[in-house]
Length: 240
Image 1 (tube, rainbow, N blue to C red):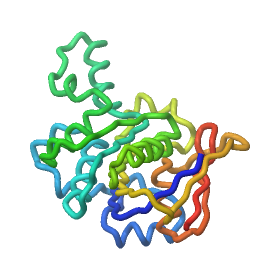
Image 2 (image 1 turned 45 degrees about the vertical axis):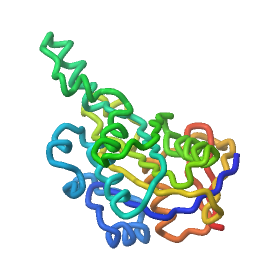
Image 3 (image 1 turned 180 degrees about the horizontal axis):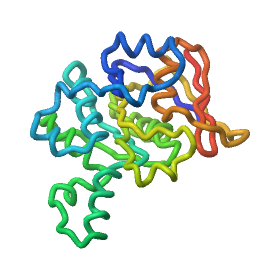
Image 4 (image 1 turned 120 degrees about the horizontal axis):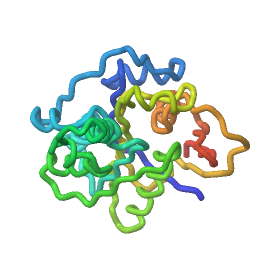
């Protein structure tokens, strides 16, 4: 499978990284995130909405609103490997301890709550989709974006994100796997600026960064060709 995109706008947030200058400097540095660094406060998200959202969803919605404040989009695709894991862990803990469930936790526990809140906060009924596909979540979301392009939606905002992984689950993560909140937003049009082709992976390899952050690091670093690994596929990127 081979896909082509133009990136017309972007926004991202992770520990210690928020504005464009910091991200561009990071793109020229080793691909690592300082998990102990502070996360910048949300600047586009209404305070009451921010309080209702979990860490990853909060960054995702704020990232989407930042892009939408500058650029027009025709549809939204949100992707998250773990979704509302923080909130669902609280629900499971309450059930195990025979405590009353939080109505907010219950209402906001579904995977598409982030993209739903984005459309509400933006006050626009965007056509939207929510994607989860393990280690390949970001790459599979790109296929979803391509499907929207094929259906006639010219500009599609893709936001890939995850929240803080509760400590209870961290022993089950692969070595070096991310457990911090982050969000990467890309406003994508169909085009030839960047092309990606999937191919079988020779072997399963460690993924020190989530796919979207690995992509962002290589793209900001102006690499002409780079690979992003997945569960069974390697996603080979080239600049047009």
